[in-house]
Length: 257
Image (cartoon, rainbow, N blue to C red; front, side, top):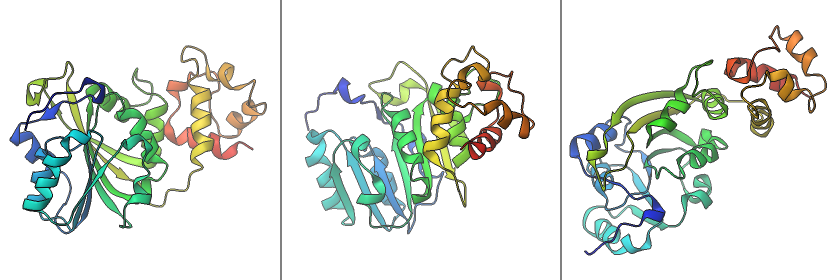
């Protein structure tokens, strides 16, 4: 099959079997319903099939890979469903017949953050998510309070999920090699999540609007009772946004009208 790499899709195909095996072993695949995003030539797809999932849905944006991926379905796994489209425009909950799924993805660097934020909105649909992202994105996901990478994404994810950075992947394990190091992250939804996503997300956008300002100066114009809310929750309003913990952001959000 003749194939030309398309830079617009951020294509970097993982070709190192030892790394593929490590990714596949992070979550239980046998007898479970799996979604894979960005299968490319099917290196991860074939490894997933070998673990005998109950079903497998793969989502690929590049339609020129259709014939290759359909051959995998015909020859290896009849319960493989193919969907060609942009993952940014898909609600995985609506297109899957399963109540709960395991997701595995080697995400294009240019859309990884947006995709992950989209998934948070229906995070309870997933049993577990294993994603490979740019190391810089992974560091933001797992960042601790008062560190440089800590921000809106860190808080959103840590309020909804347990995050585990499993390992880094060097560029030479891909074809073509990217210019950055990648990281594999395991994301496990927190049980019994009861958050107003839109409310807390807006609070975080406002809080981190200017990282150099104290949080009072970012919030006071829009939230007129914010000083009282901080006082009632024993929080210091003279701190910067990156010095407020996820748990405290949740307290603030619940106190807002």
